[in-house]
Amino acid sequence: MTHDDEDEPAGSEACFAHRLVNGHVVDPQTWKDVSVFRKAERARLYALRKQLAPDDRAEMAQRVSAQLDDLLGDISGRTIAVYWPIRGELNLRHWMEAASHRGARIALPVVIGKDQPVEFHRWTPDCAMAKGIWNIPVPADAQPVQPDVVIVPLLGVDAQGYRLGNGGGYYDRTLVRLPGDLLTIGVGQPFARIKTIFPMPWDIAMKTIVLGDGTVTSHT
Image: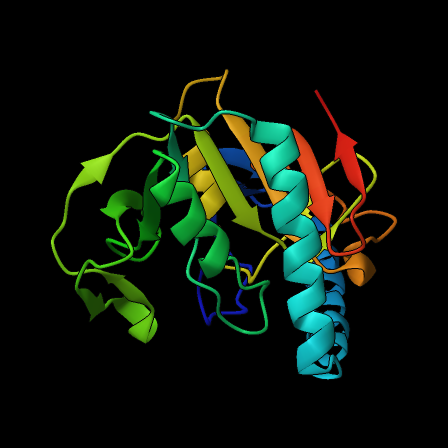
């Protein structure tokens, strides 16, 4: 979602012993330690992504696409937010095209501003694209929609379904505002599995995880 690795939500000092981050009171030393850990994990996982051969990337995307078809079944009339891949994320654009032809309304996340939730804008295989923030392609004709399924790219994921993303916090800020029955599906490479991300109060767990080796894990 972002090229930022900051993993530092906007915050202010609540008192000498705590920091107010995203409306949550957090021990500053704990947050510092977690931030250092996450930065190191991101560097390690980005390096593993770069080592993947193109054929391996394509095979992983195909396995995830097949599992998405099984999970979602009849998608005609459903609004599904996916993503435009950056930084070695699984490329699901072929799946997006196929889903659109099967009657799904596909949307892409659009960053409106720093520290703000994203909007989801309608996408079709033939729609014009424009450069959004950080030059990530977005639909040129802004048609905001509310998805009932959100497919989220992940860099890392722990046993409870908490994801490690690129560090901007956009999905967490967005998902907390959407209905609780929304289906969230995190997708990533098999090596994304980690023991823990040391989740913070604002982190939101995915309901389902699909990885490039074809494994599916439910957290509902």
